[in-house]
Amino acid sequence: MFKKFSREESVSSLNLAKSSVARGVKAKIGEQYPYLEENELLDVLMPKKAPMYLAKCQGHMGMVVVDGQPMFFSNRDGTYFPTLRLLHKYPDMMAKLRVDRGAIKFVLSGANIMCPGLTSPGATIHDHVDNEAPVAIFAEGKEHALAVGLTTMSTKDILAINKGVGVETMHYLNDGLWKITNIDI
Image (cartoon, rainbow, N blue to C red; front, side):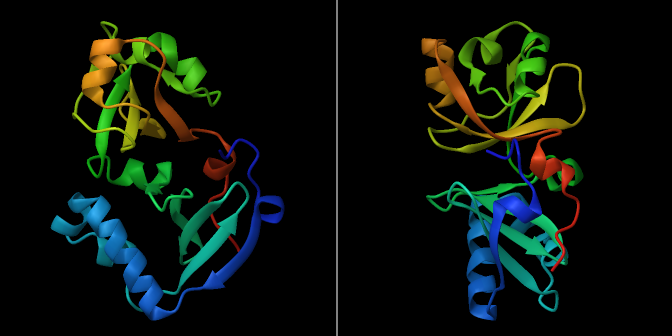
């Protein structure tokens, strides 16, 4: 999704969100990630007084920018995903899957994650999720997440079928979104 992402070429518009829209976005993110709501982190990440900008990006993607920092991005259906920088600060905010060592180089080049990479001896399915759920992808032997993705099948099906794409990679380390630390407003 963000392989060749840059502010100049990929962001078509960047608009200040009205307070009602900002509350709606914040509420939807709170629904999707109850960990942030339970630990009262949403007010820390998105203070009321801080301006929230909504960016429209190529490929029908949207982005939530607070104080110039990209926090979340969304796809066409409105599912919000945290950026990896945010996920590294709060690693327990979303469901986790761990890939084996052999899958790391492929994930870091933007490949989707195949079921065998999630079911092999070095891999772990930490949390059981349904189809089309946002997940954090960790690597065997590593502390921080290396990607954020969307499951293409439930974890029960991943274990049972063990063939095909299990997670569609949305954002990974060292892609274009990772390289952007601030968006000039």
